[in-house]
Length: 133
Image 1 (spheres, rainbow, N blue to C red):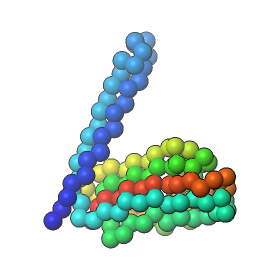
Image 2: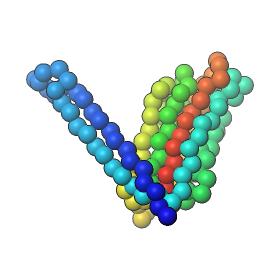
Image 3: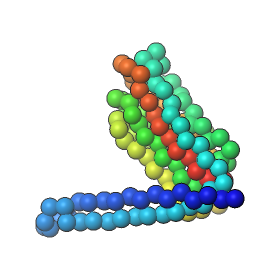
C-alpha cells in the first residue's frame, strides 16, 4: 500500500527595487511511494579524498524524492545513476533535493553516491532520504 511523502520549499528574497525580504514563493509537492530508505553515512578522518560512498536506495528502484545533506566541513561531489564523473558538487551544509510526483519515464534516478573532495579532520556525516517505487 503506497504511503505519501511531502516536500515544501519556501523562498524569501529581495526583488529588484523592492523592500527587503518582500519576495516570497512556496513550492509544495506530495508523492506516493512504496519503498523508502533513510540514513546517514559516517565520514571518518581516515577516509581519503576521492572515496566514494553509495547512497543506499534499499528497495527503491526509481526515486521520486531524493534528499542529500552534506554535514561535512568540505565540498562533496554527487554522482547520479552510476556516473563515474561528478554530476555536481554540494558545499558544506548544502542540500540537494530532487522531488517529483511521479518518476520520469526516461532517465529516472536509480542510484546516487557521494564522493569526498578532501579528507575530514573529525568524524562527520552525509544524510540522505530516498522515497520511490
